[in-house]
Image 1: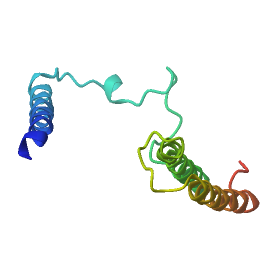
Image 2: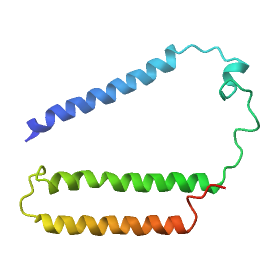
Image 3: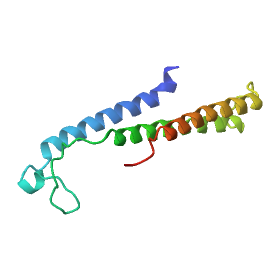
Image 4: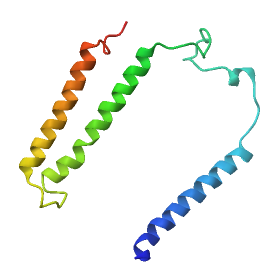
Amino acid sequence: MLGSYAVFLLLLAFVIVAGGVMLVLSHFLAPRRPTGIKASPYESGMPPLGDARERFSVKFYLVAMLFIVFDIETVFLLPWAAIYTGGGGVATVSTGFLLVEMIVFLAILAVGYVYVWKRGAFQWD
């Protein structure tokens, strides 16, 4: 039983050690010559226009959260499609049940999308 996990544990240990070694080496070997130009924020070659810590509208965060939610929800379609087409090796679940389940899932997503649209989250002011 342990033999099947040995390769994974060896790879995990290698990744952790390699990551740690790279972090430590970059900390000690990195050139350190700070100047005023290096410390200033880069904005396409233009001088900065104001403070970098200014407040953003809640609209930015709302759009970002909506993107993440709908992006993650679409990721759930991939395993379903693999099982539905027979690539998942699950023979005990009927395809009719899977189809109804995904239609309900997409309907819930559509209701959420329409709700967010009606609330004006996609209108940029």
